[in-house]
Length: 363
Image 1: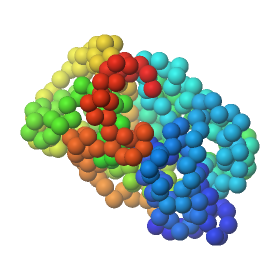
Image 2: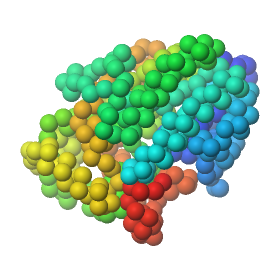
Image 3: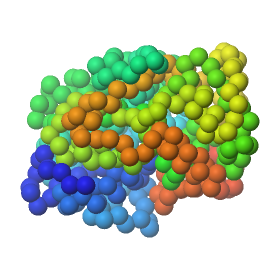
Image 4: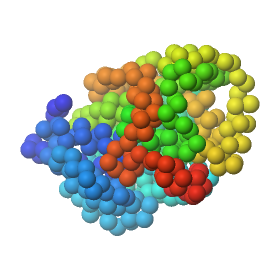
């Protein structure tokens, strides 16, 4: 896992990872720590781990939502900043997510420029893309205006527009935008259950032969990726002199048939409006954290062509999309997590706390 550094001294790079304790951050910190081209990693998070000490990593507590002046000091002397921090909840109060995701991201970008960091790698998403085809993949030139009905998509698209202006204003910063499909690993199962399914999902029952049917509806075709494969692409983007956007996804695309094979279930055709209405009702009652707008977006997101990542990053996923989902489901059944506050398993007390604080209402 060695590459020639794009910037910095030959004796090793200093890489700052903002949002280092989440799904992608934990995998990226490990990958960077195993690379001899990287001498030092600064992991920034709101809540730093107390008992996880990855190689070459120093933890710093900071919140991009309100640390205006401190970020530039933390970034000074770094060879690259990887920005992963993102808030997915509360879905019922998008003003809070906007404060972190949009205003906080802008703080990170401005601090990169102020500190003279030569490289910025930003975690965009497939969710930044405008609605697109499900029968063929699109490359990075597809419009990135998001889906207006989902805060997550609006915020990702807004940051794309901000970077469109940022890059010509800061030509000395090499900007890379990573646009991955949905990212899964076993250790992130508890976090993703909290973010998307809520406290009432019986994880132990999400197993083959206990899920009798998989709904099939127009637009249900999406891509997935194992988190470790996503992290490897980020590592390569740090170390190689590349710029611009990169799609990341694994084969095969997942539809009702693929999901039914995973669960050993039957495919049942269902009308999209009925499924959406049920989800919208559950969301309004605070029974699930995922908004109906995000459901709308998933059914409209395009499939991604990953040719540029293969050519310029020499990147190929080691796990299939099916592998990634099956590992996530295994983690869901086992209540898996990791030793960071973001990925920590919930347990019964944690689920009760989710209910007590209002599902989808508070971070």
